[in-house]
Length: 130
Image 1 (cartoon, rainbow, N blue to C red):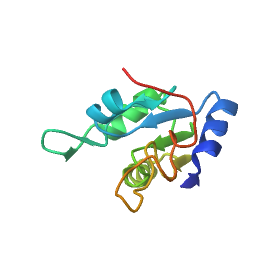
Image 2 (image 1 turned 45 degrees about the horizontal axis):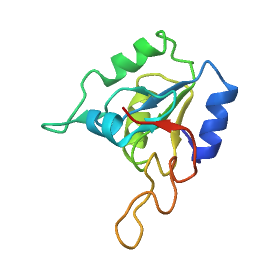
Image 3 (image 1 turned 135 degrees about the vertical axis):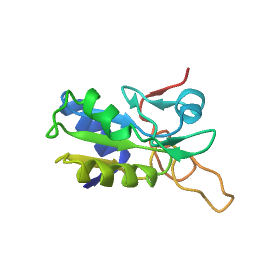
């Protein structure tokens, strides 16, 4: 697994149109907090029970056109869930998986706020909210 800073991940996705950019946060985070422009949504785990999505690998395979060699870039809130999801994808045979460090919202600062230190939004990268 590779680890990319948000700006590097954005550049990679822009330069590699075959790359599949996957946001693995919950439905609520993806739709209401916002998401990186161009990211497809496949929840790693979700409400109400916060169980792991048993179809995660299958859903990513479908989006990847069943190609295990297609570059996959994963993003979550802070870069932790995406590491777990990336490990599972690698175990399933994916060969080119990257994690976005600090995720979409970034790490917590001293006041326990996100978006103040780092992350996709903090870096001013393109995003949208429904």
